[in-house]
Image (cartoon, rainbow, N blue to C red; front, side, top):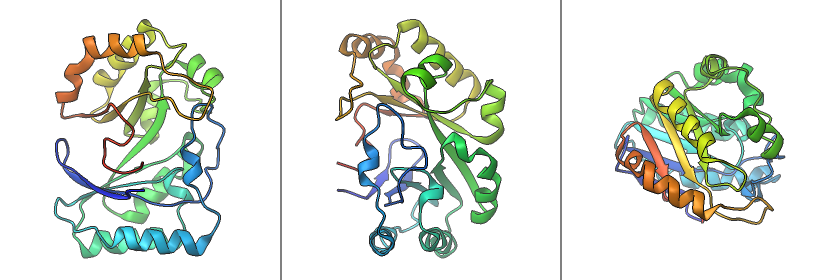
Amino acid sequence: MERYSRIENKCQREIVLLKARPCAWSKCTFCDYIEDNSTCHDEMVRINEDVLSRVTGEYGVLEVIDSASIFELPQITLQNIKQIIQDKHIHTLFIEAHWIYRHRIQEIRDFFGIRTIIKIGIETFDDNFRNRVLNKNATFQSIEELKKYFDSPCLMVGIKGQTKEMIQKDIEILVNHFQHGTINIYRNNSTPIKRDDALVQWFMQNYAYLQDDPRYDFLCEPTDFGVGD
């Protein structure tokens, strides 16, 4: 499992994949990332300290991800991140949280005390597909409500049941309302949710240009950030 990498093509930054407690939601139908969770506090702290020790601060920008939300990291790990921010002169931090933590977002911004980009995995702006099919439990009623808490939506493309019209609307909302986002091409995993290869092919024919848009990270594989397995 690779847990440290550098993103050098867009918004240059270091990225670390840390170990966290089980996701507080853990019910998304397509997600098996939660297999990296742990209930052993000492294991999480030890692994995370080792990974964070590799941060150099060379870009002044750090992204911290785990298989749950930033709030599922041990408090000791959060303190270690804060110390590294100070020691390595980090000025911008990327983190991710589930919708259920929306009322704690300002708390985490204040804790780190620097420019913090909060990402959220919504997968699609289509409420029915997001919550009834993918079971995301991200129940925002408008784009304005989402933006009240979060800066950067993560979209998933190429899931059976999605439509071209749904994806077209997702991309339209992304580019018109957000200065940062992530586009993930879905890859089959251990869950029953399957990839639609024809839809992926259509998407790449029509939206591959977004790979060059500096505002958006574009992941053809989940490991394109250089972390994970």
